[in-house]
Length: 117
Picture 1 (cartoon, rainbow, N blue to C red):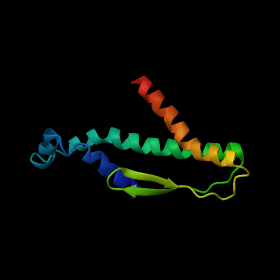
Picture 2 (picture 1 turned 135 degrees about the vertical axis):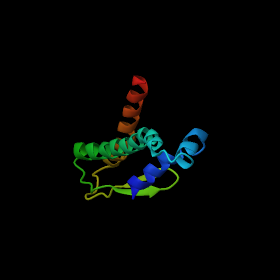
Picture 3 (picture 1 turned 180 degrees about the horizontal axis):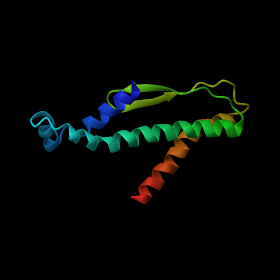
């Protein structure tokens, strides 16, 4: 379901583009849908990177976490995921490390992609 809502979000990014809408509705040219794939892949990739950051931080600190459960959203494509803890962190520092692992890695990857152009 989340893949569907992310794709819907990517398509809606072009909803106000008259060339896109005309090609899609009047000419029935469905090849213009492929122009939304970079947004779809980008949003999905950032979600995966974010969750991998939590997983990597949890492995480094010895905290067991479960599989992330994605939360679909029609407005944003995804509200993120809920990742359950399977074991409690031993300290607040470990909790902080696991919590910030996702946003931290996502920020680093975003800055690298931004730098590459």
